[in-house]
Amino acid sequence: MLIQEQLSVQEKLEILSDAAKYDVSCSSSGVDRKGKAGTIGSASKAGICHSFSADGRCISLLKILFTNQCIYDCKYCINRSSNDVVRTAFTPDEVCQLTIQFYRRNYIEGLFLSSGIFHHANYTMDLIYQTLKKLREEYHFHGYIHVKAIPGADPVLIEKTGFLADRMSINLELPTAEGLKKLAPGKTREKILTPMKQIQKGITANQFELVEYKKTSSFVPAGQSTQMIVGATPESDFQMMMVAEALYNNYDLKRVYYSAFVPVNQDRELPSLPGGPPLLREHRLYQADWLLRYYGFQAKELLSEERPNFNVLLDPKCDWALRHLELFPVEINQADYYTLLRVPGMGVKSVRRIIAARRGGPLSFDALKKIGVVLKRAHYFITCSGRMMYPVKIEEDYICRHLVGDEKRKVWDISSSGMFRQLSLFDDVGVQHKDKIQIGTGCVSL
Image (cartoon, rainbow, N blue to C red; front, side, top):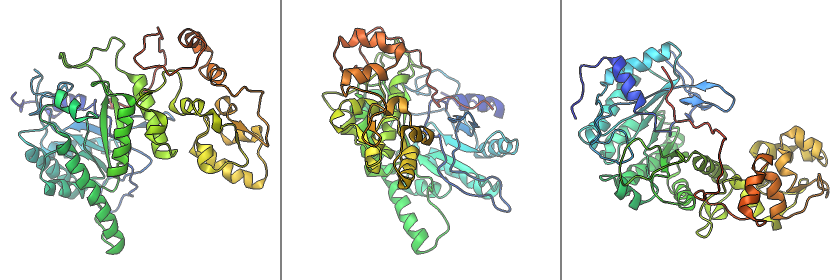
């Protein structure tokens, strides 16, 4: 389709910001850089986001596509080449002016710039590079920039862009090559993983040069991330977590983002979702991803081929603990750091506080509550000085009945029939999920 060049910048902004809202891989900056004389802006590793943080703060960035024109016909994408939508594109100067204007009005803290594939990969990547070069050198913008690397683009272009951006990302889109072949003709795992490996090697080499040769130019200092769509193809949670684990181990990714499939197109290859986008499943994947990155878990500990999907009623950590009751209860005053991390109701901060506080003497349950331990969950799995908080039967069914909560006990009784079992996310047990999970997929209103 033809690019609509006669549109105003405001009209382009409305189209290209809306078209960018399904990309969730931009929730934090991961870089700390102070402002300096002669430049505009700064970057904080506390996070730049297009949604709301856990404490309710609105953390914003200008999140746009350079263009929604695309040569690919990915079946799940609103910008697929076969869709009849208005097509437009910014110029590099327009992106720069928008960024500066919104920053000066205190609307944003940074820029997230993605793009459809305009003509071909090199042409699109060069436009993105020229935009960042202008923004940094002509407009003297010193704030945070997250940019997409275009699969198939010349490595030289990706490298030059990497020295101007804070974070780069390349979306894996779907967890398997078969899924890509089915829903994203034209894209291959090789095209996606090749620049991902290049960025990883570039970051490693640059870190060495910064220390060894005291160079000042940083290559993608906030690291790289990726995104996988949840529910567009039939892969299990186990397959998705194994892919995520491999990406963390082999490509040093900062984050893997999970995006619940939203059916924006009609296509026989796409699944029907009578219950709406799989937001609960997305939520469980994020919880498990956190366990991989900060709690020392491996994907095979959480799931298996025999048990491929996460429990609907329990978070992955509680589910794991119930399946390994032989490891509990844990003595709070003796267990090591990594053992405590695996106790439901305890996070990284609370475990660190426990390790520090018990140097002064044995800890009680009251002390744990003040430290921040969620005793409502933790008390089933711990002892203090050899004693439990309440009399508890160390039994799967008993503990699970209490963990799932009063509002779900009826559902539990119907589905379990007196026996603890893993619930498939695709089981139809008449559960109405009323919990609204806030997902950072919406674009900030500018």
